Amino acid sequence: QVQLVESGGGVVQPGRSLRLSCAASGFGFSAYDMHWVRQPPGKGLEWVAGIWYDGSNQNYKDSVKGRFIISRDASRSTLSLQMNNPRPDDTAVYFCVRGIRVRGIIYFDLWGLGTLVSVSS
Amino acid sequence: SYVLTQPPSMSVAPGKTATITCGGHNFESKSVHWYQQKAGQAPVLVIYYDSARQTGIPQRFSGSNSGDTATLTISRVEAGDEADYYCQVWDTSGDQRGLFGGGTKLTVL
Image 1: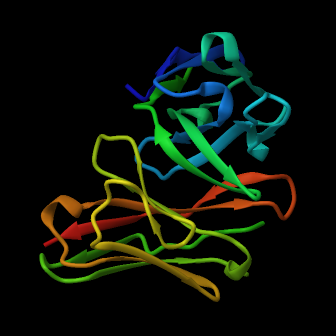
Image 2: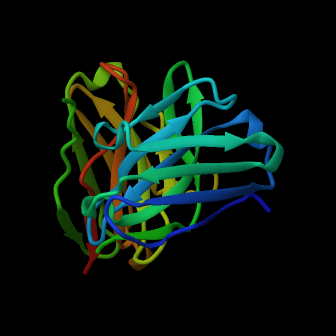
């Protein structure tokens, strides 16, 4: 079954750290770019970060640059997001997403169910 | 910075046509993709590359892109189409990044 399953969400204090994981199954993980997209409560979708299929390139939303790190483990078909120094405005449901990239154009064809991160003291 | 503009909400009667717009700049150089998100669920890809329908999406859904506006059209609207709809582009004008419109909540009367 083709799916993405996120884990690791929860409550975290501002300035601490949290690591999100995403387990991919049912498809060739190493052939696809992967991304994190988040959705603050009651608000719209925000792209957070992306990593190329081979891990050679990473891109980040401006507000998370220098704080979040996206990585992948091909041997375990796992995507991760290390959230350092989180802020209250990072509170959101975080979706693990598969990206399709053709001639520099990227869209998202497979989404996980999401994991909720709440940043609060 | 690049911004995608969508109307926050719209309503349509069953059987009618819903037209959801996404405004941007220089759209002719970008491809626009559309997602449907029903209440409490993850988003689902509906349209990619402006007008290509994702596998499993009914033919009632279509997309177009002209000038500074992309459009998602839903013909013969059904109650099950009630959802939030988001447009998306991949912006390469500076650092590469994904961009979503603010979303349009479609209510079926």
